[in-house]
Each structure stands twice: as structure tokens, then as C-alpha cells.
Amino acid sequence: MNEREKYIDEAMKRVYADIVWIEENELRKSSFNDLSIKEIHAIIAITMYDHQTASEVARKLHLTPGTLTTTVDRLVRKGYVRRIRGEDDRRIIRLGLTPKGRLVYRAHDAFHRQMVRSFLKDLDPEEVKTIEKAIRNLEVFLEAHSD
Image (cartoon, rainbow, N blue to C red; front, side, top):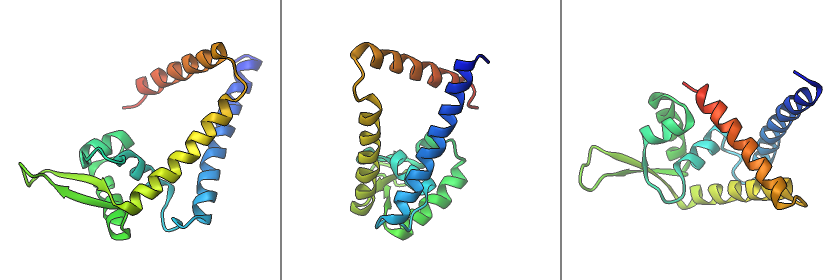
């Protein structure tokens, strides 16, 4: 690795660690301090209005269905998520957010919007395109290495 690559590698590690730390810290101070980051990410994966099956959500989060079931059970008990039986096929259960879950979703989304705006502040359109290309490259790499 050359010096520039080393710097970028270290910066990415710091940024990832800082985002996780800040999310956890903000969560502890919020009215949603009964949630873990893992539970927040499950709420985000469930989404606001798209009632997905547990299998679909588990795939998004790279979790086994059993692990997701445990998380969903906790979120249902805490009042953030609800299970919705299919109208045509009652065996199919979809996941949806309660009003309380939607509040968490919106708060987390607002944090990420603010972070992205700060990240892109004062960049010209060509610089933003370069960042988009670099992020796409990283996504392709990660997809190739996720089993």
C-alpha cells in the first residue's frame, strides 16, 4: 500500500468507528435508549412502509432468520415493530413499524442526512461524482466478498 492508500484505509477505519460510536452515544442520550444499534439497524431494514417478510429483512442485514427472529421479538415487546399476517395467505408474516418505530426511523434517517450533507458540503459536482464512483467501487468490492 502506498502512503495515500494507507491514509485512506486509516481514515475509513476511523470514520466507521466514529459513526458507530456517535450513533451509540446519541442513542443513549435519546428517548430511544432502550434500543441497541443492532435493533436500530433492524428497524431501518424493515423500512417505513414496505412490509417485508422476515427472510427479506434477514438477507438485508446478513443475519440468519433465527437471529432476526430474536431481534424482532424484542422490538415487538418494546413496541417498535409489529407482525402483519398476509391477507391472502395467513402463513406469510410481514414486518411493519409501529408509530414509535417510525419515529426512530425518522430520527436515524435525519442523522444520516445531516452527515451526508456535511460530507458533501463545499464540493463541486465533479468532486461529488468522484465520491459516488469511489463508493460504487467499494460497494462492488463488498458485494463480491459477502457470502
